[in-house]
Length: 350
Image (cartoon, rainbow, N blue to C red; front, side):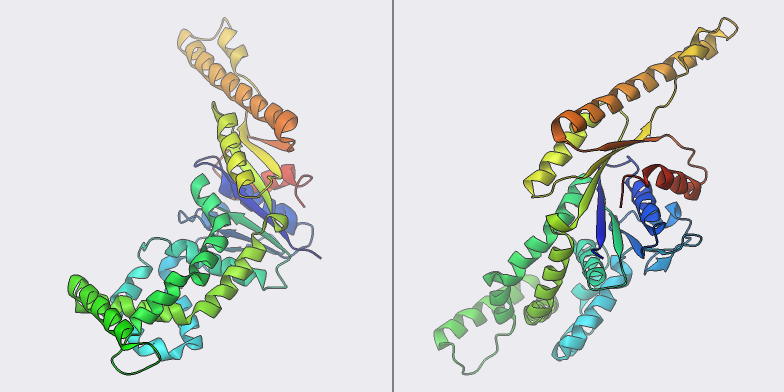
């Protein structure tokens, strides 16, 4: 059976994590072994599924066939380095106590995305994972995740990494390279060392040499992640909320996805209004204060209804994408919300 892979994208605060958890729950209910993974550093997925802590792949209590995963740069980057050192043990001494390596898990730019990509690539090689649902960070980061395998391939296969690795390994002595080239490289290394300091330069060169020797492993990573996130392999749910401007937000996301070769499969309108308090606002027996509150609430609901209808009309008439509306549900019990949304969405996802 072909793996079902869903990716939820959207702006902040629209309920992507809840929708991702619900899609995964609905698919797991069909009997397929399903993993829901969040690549959002905010890591709300555990709370949404009733898991006190979430890091490595964890079974979701009460939901057969479903497990959840939340890659954590701070916890996972060193395990990842150990894994790669097993393939390149010659670098163990150079990386021992490396201050730059120690800093990688503490917010180093791009490291969370890399750790997430490795986790997703591992899932691509797991035959027991029959369905995968990915919860992304707000819009720009979600789009970046889809583009990351290709960007990583460009870096790995480009000349810059190979050149940097060779530069990091420059040592005195004879070799195939001309003396003039070696002299120039040593001068550049000396200049960088002088500018950055001996400790920082040594740490940087050690990491560069390690990365250069890891090119085959990184190439496999990029290929696996690229296969998993390829346009033909994924179904994308655009998640929005019923609020003014929603149709423009979804249009921008859809256009960006299409530009990257992805065709969205579904639009989910979260917190869509199902009723109005306008009747309360007109009751003669209601106090003036209560009528004023009800009138404001009714106006907000009406605006939300107009926004939801605009998204549905655009999706139906222009984008040709199916839509589903999820009503506002009480957030007091996140697990109950996920269960209800899964019931509503079960006929749409597969």
